[in-house]
Length: 533
Ligand SMILES: Nc1ncnc2c1ncn2[C@@H]1O[C@H](COP(=O)(O)OP(=O)(O)OP(=O)(O)O)[C@@H](O)[C@H]1O
Image (cartoon, rainbow, N blue to C red):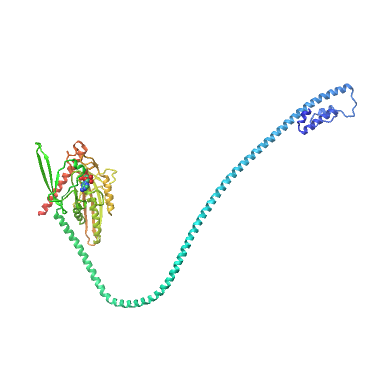
């Protein structure tokens, strides 16, 4: 009991000792912590009561002992209960403390995180501010430097100004004395002017006479131009409205491997050009004998293998001049595949030494039209480029997105129109360059044994010219056609018989060439008949 009560809290000890003293003194003092009313009222008697006999005393002592045991057991239960209640309260307090601690920890963590956020914002603000200040400092340094330089310049300038001021002061003194001299000279000039005015009237008359003379000369120039045109075109007609030139291209590497006839130029290839070519060949007959043959050809002019593009153009140039005089001109390149037709017409390039007849003719026409502007002429030029392949017309300047059907019409003035083709206005030579480039891309080519990248189509470049003279009221319309005909080759020499596509191409080409030949012969006949009348 003692050992147990020593583990109880102080309050319990007091109750326990009170209970003990009650039991020892046997007084009716109620136990404070035990609420047993019956024990208080029925088992205790006032102190002035009569002493008990021995049996009653034993009885009551036994009763008291029992009661004490019960009381002790009850007390120990109560003590245990209170101990448990205290323990529960302790646990509750601990739990409360733990919750408080957790709440405090959470608050602390929140505060920490808020603090970290604020710290990072403050750091960023600080960094921004530092950057801003640094850029301001560098800007101010630059300004400072620039101002320093400006100041130095100003100093130098002001030094210069000071020395110039000194110079000007000296000069102004000199000028003042010059002014006096000039004033005198002005007075002299005014005197001379009054004299000149008197003779001015005579000069104006002279000017009028000169202007009249100038007008007369301009009229004479225009009349001279008209005469030149007439004479030029008469010369062209005398030379023949249809002229045939032969150009022999230089030998190419592949020519050496095949057997070719020998070409001879009987009247030489001097600067003015020969007119004849003799073709010599020697073959072996079936009897094994050598047979020498020679064929003579005469042309309006023969150009040898060494001839350059500008020599050929010197002949063509005169014909392009006729276009500017309002005549229609057509130039054909005709020959076997690989004989140099495209080289002659279009050339190795569109500018420079190798430029062919088409670019040269157009550039020449551009040049001449500009010169004619002084005489009151203005010109509109347009270009179209067509290709004829297997009797079908392709527009070389068209987009080529869809196949179009083109119709050919001839009007009574002799001009020919092809429907639905792209006609490009030509304002400057670069337009021509672009036009030729575009057309070249679209040309149809195929392979034959004779010429690897052989052109199997004819191409027709047409330059349409419209000229107006505002002074004389003259107007002209003409066309220059530059035609690169498809290669003319014999059906058997190129292996075309075994290839149906090539066979059709070759038949179409030969058919169109033979029609062309008929047409030219008819034109020559008509011209001759006209000349005889
Ligand atoms: N006068 C020349 N000088 C140098 N090379 C030339 C000359 N003429 C032609 N050639 C060259 O000969 C080859 C054939 O010429 P080109 O293509 O002009 O022949 P073509 O008659 O137009 O042939 P095709 O009928 O197949 O179109 C080309 O390689 C060309 O560069």
